[in-house]
Length: 288
Image (cartoon, rainbow, N blue to C red; front, top):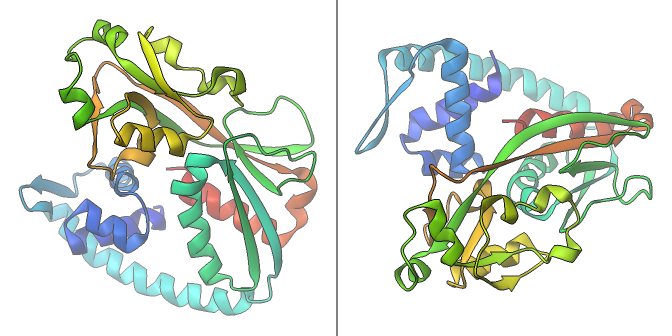
């Protein structure tokens, strides 16, 4: 069983609310939800019942909670010993990632890693472009496309979903959106087409032919802010928007775009302990 799943299980069992559990773990509440779902699939039982007060343990959940607390104490003892053994791991590791994923997902993971391994210095490049490993801009890169050549170690981190979002202000002052055909009448927020850094970001044409695009930006963070201010409908990664109560989903059952993140590192770095440490941590915590 994946111990990481049990950490999320114990946090939700203690707090009973996704948002509170997520805050205590320093992650997005959708991450907690995915972890719990993965654990329930792994065990083949339902661990929580959702009600008006939040999440309540089932009988199977109560039994697992007792076991998980024992495992937690054992794991903490092992980690304490391992920490003492790994305090000599030193040096700098530079990680490059796309702007949104780097800020909302990779950043918190690396923050926690830095607290544990205080002698490792971590640089995070969260950029609205692809980080070039061949030019040594970073040691580890997280990209939207799998490289087809080069002396690299490559692993798929995860799929992620993009959905349509708009502010309450926008939805109240524009034509109603009840079907996919209604999107053609809407104003959109999007990327600057001729400056797209990956073909994987060219998804607006897959969805509709909007009458107008009010705001374009190379930055997904700027697009998020534009959507919050009511400038139009935006296609945004759900991991960025989930905690944002100022935006509402638009046609959630009809519109969903799936893309993937890949992690890449030069083969030669596989022999370097600090590189492996950061690589393994990201792969373990960002893959779900």
